[in-house]
Length: 272
Image 1 (tube, rainbow, N blue to C red):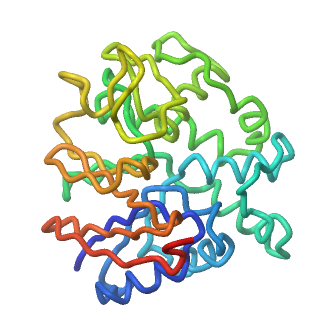
Image 2: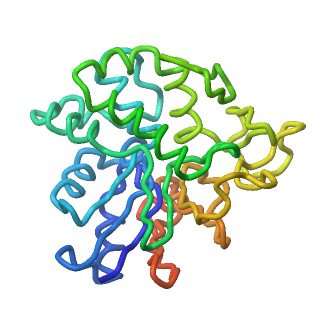
Image 3: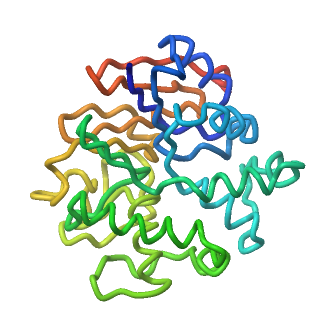
C-alpha cells in the first residue's frame, strides 16, 4: 500500500490521470490525498470532481479557497471573477450532487500512523495540530449542516486578521477558513496578510511565511500544503509545499508519503 499527496489540481484532470498512471496508482490498495483547490482556473473542473468522487475511499481531498469560492458562488453570494472556470459545474445537471459532495470534505486532515497533517494554505503559529483539527471540525460541521448558507453568506473578508480564543460566530469561522485556505504570510504573533502572492521575497515589513515563524506550535508534525504556486515545490522536514503550478503550465506533483519520493508530470498548457 502507498499513500500519495498531490498538489493543487484546479480543474486539471488530464494531468492528474497521467500522474496516477505514472505512479501505477491502484485504488483497492493505495490512497491519494489532495491538498485542496480541486477546481477553478483549469479547463476540467467538473471532470476533476467526477474523477475524484469515483475513487471513493481511495481519495482523501481537503478544501481549498477555490473550492469554497465555488460553494459561495453557487449560493449566489459572490460573482464569478475573470479567470473563473466554474460554469461547467454551475450549469451541470448533477450540480447539486457535486456541491453536496464538496461540502462533505474536510478542511484539514491528520494521519497519526503516517505522521503527516494536511491543510490547503497553512496553520497559525499558536495552533497545535490538535487545536487546528478541532477548529477545522467547527467549520466542517457548519458546512455539512442544513444551515450552510448562513455560513457561506458572510464568509468573505480579511477581518479579523488574527486569531483570538474568544472569537465567536462568523468572525471565528472566517479566521479559521482564512488561515487554512488563504494565508501565506503572518507576523510572529499570527496576524495574517493576504495581498502578497509572489515568492517569499520583498515581503511586507514584519511578515514572514507562516511556516518560518519561530517556535510555531505545530512544528513537531510535517504539514503538507498547497496554495502557493509562486513558491513552487518546497521540501523540508517540517513542511512540504506541493503546489507546483500545474494550472499555470508547469507541473503537477505527487509525493509518496512513506518514503517522500517525488513524482511529477507536465501540463499540456505549458507555454500558454
